[in-house]
Image (spheres, rainbow, N blue to C red):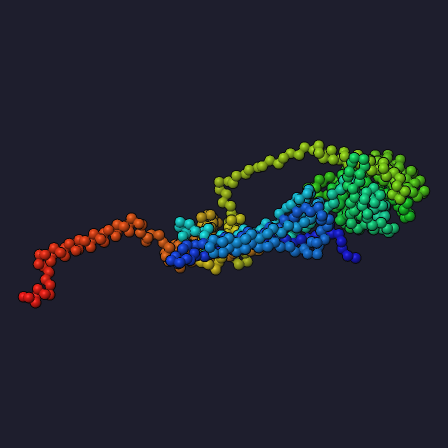
Length: 510
């Protein structure tokens, strides 16, 4: 049998990686070294879950459980920034609950166009144009793009309905939905005909509400028997529960009272999510519908047990989905209970969450240094958002980029904390998470390749401003040369006039 309805899937999502920045030098005619002009990389696309009214199942994600957003584009020369990766928007039905692999609820998507960013895209790396400064005139490196988030999530669909019809298989729930609403569920004379929840809209006077036909329950449903947990999941959001009892069953060990007790026990044993209301199902408004009253023996049995059920404080309706008897009273009664439940929800005082500002402590550095014992010996692990992000952005094949990382870590105070933790030259230092970390031997005065350069990191002597003369200095130098030439000519003329210089013709005459 082909699968056409899925209400729980495990989905692997991955956001796009950020584009790499570019190290480039501007080159024009008469300006072979015009300065850095590398552009920034684009941001990676995020994975977004959004409620779509046209979506009714999670079937698409059952067939293709791996989804990835596009990466950001790398930057280019001439200050050209890379394009951002487009967000990957995944449509989900209303009522979808998002959980992580540990079972913690991340989001409850209720409401038109409600959305949740489940995986954020990585930021793009900076080009050498953005890294240039007064001290770093010509950076020969750029930052790499950050990787996007990747995680495994669980999507669970919990139907949104005001009224839920519950009961044993073949109790007539689907028939009841088909006659009180426009829904057309599958109806047959064998158990477990309904395998998926069927929703219908009921109109009773000016009231409108939704009713759900939940697949049949059996003893042990709260423990997962007969797919009971999958079925009970769709009852969590309903405010009114209707027990549909089959008064014409042919099974000798069943009767309306025992059927009701079994289903009540399963409702009491099932514990819904606290974040979705958390109220036990046994505390919801419950109504008993004695169905199939068109059968004479069933009618007599219904009349017999009705006083006992009312003695329990339950509202009882005797109906026949086939003969359409008792349906009008039932629909108007359900409308009254739904209106009361909605008024109760609206009457709840919803306190706006206050924005709590917790300033960082004066000694909060944003990272931690912890000494650990590993099979290879003693290591010092550095953990924190900024050090981890800087590790991902560093091109370790570029000595200048590694030196830039060392400068950033030093300014952040990592070296000082390593000293305090007991690290010495040659100690093993690990930066980043355990599954993706960088390990190196620590040298407190590590120049990280800067000694290979002809000047400080990020400088180029050919672009140095110290040797360039100003216009005033050039004008002064020009006038100085002219004054020196004039003085030399005057001195030469005076010496010739005094007879210190003789021409070759004068020597011949003598």
